Length: 141
Image (cartoon, rainbow, N blue to C red):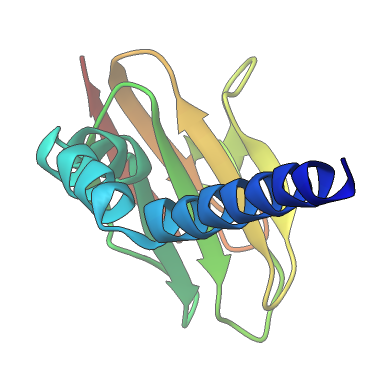
């Protein structure tokens, strides 16, 4: 009876080894890349478009660059201060904020401020420290 028990154990071990070898082969087979390709074919452009819903405005030489920007509703605008001076990102004109501004943030040198424009309209942006700094953001929706 020892021989049949030994044969049974060997049969189980061989089956386990064969099953284990099949699993790694299955894992390393191309279906995973094919799934990735399918995901790529199923329009990853949509997430990229969502990610693309971000615009950058440089602050340099006491100017906003660009001075005019047209964006879609929901776009996040990141103001990047590349100047050696502190500035503000303030909805208003000539260094004065409007009542209840959508943005009124200080931005230190090498700092950033993000503003998401959720409503269509035209927004004037100014710097409280440098009233001649002006830009216009048009939000379309």
